[in-house]
Length: 336
Length: 105
Image 1 (cartoon, helix red, strand yellow):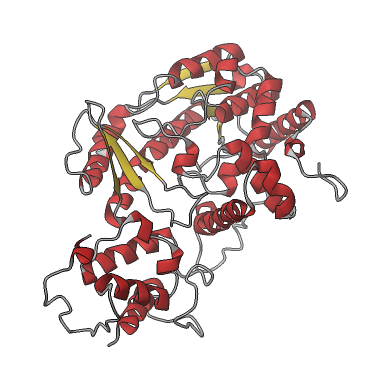
Image 2 (tube, chains in turn orange, green):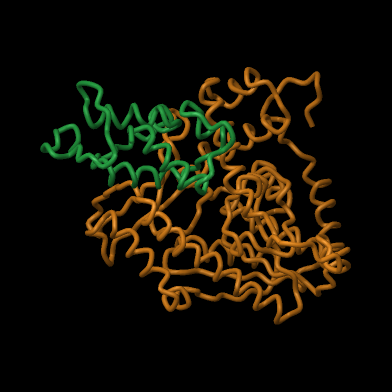
């Protein structure tokens, strides 16, 4: 941990993985068994590092028989996701269920609604095309974070167009079906076995609102929400998460074209984004931070501005429903 | 109504629910005053393109052009009349003449 006399470096994010893991395991036991009075935990495992670490922590805390891994692929999921999730489940010795949610999404017209929204700006977009949405470079210019849609024809030709407000809202509303459908299935199994649902956001995602309200943002506990992603990787190594998962580049796994998280949300890859967020949270002078993260002062200022504006824009995602008057018999923390 | 008055009315009606923030001035930064976010910028783009028949490029979408009433007014005027100042009057058909190449851009 940084003190006033230390020089800022990437080492500020180094943790004692064994001690941190033990602390979280103890908390998981307390939350799930004593406070929530549940028999175990459901974790949706995507083959990514965050959900893998959460599942591994739950196994260490509660034992493998009390952890259920869910694999919830859909038409646009990466073909890598399911095998990696299976590899994790085997290494942890947990039981799993696979529920392909494509049928539910099709019935809800998720893909159809998304495609109609895309066609408002790229009329030729049709069956067989792939798509993703992308932000402009937020590091080297002052452009507003207005999304574009990128489509790829079956012949491999790519077209990019800026989304209008109507088409943007249409694409987001439709694709959010995916996270909300997954959560519905997670709670089915939680109800079925009297389990709690573990959410898997890391600190960067939790702070910056990188989740869908009532989708992946919903959970009974979020064991790694206080850890920077860099620290989640350290835990992954400590917990013996399979190498292939530790080496997998972070992805949103939401659109049919490959999409990095920085293309979709953050101005930098997680290693540097973590350091910027840490430095901002600890009021480290920008002059110390910029050379460590390999940015100019101007670029760092832009990253800080994005952190602030994203925090402001996404704070409501954390809110419980707001009441017009207090109900004293139902206090906010419920005394649990 | 002058251009900047029309723009001010649009911003107040759409982003302040018709009630301007206390002391809201035409030079005030929308970002610093927390008046608009990226979704609101998209609303603004749609309004400008429809009302003034201008096509905005990605390079136009920067705070230098959008972050206050006065900046917006200067930007719209520069796009409508790139070679000189034009005061747009609400209710006046500023598009009576054929669109210039710049306006069609």
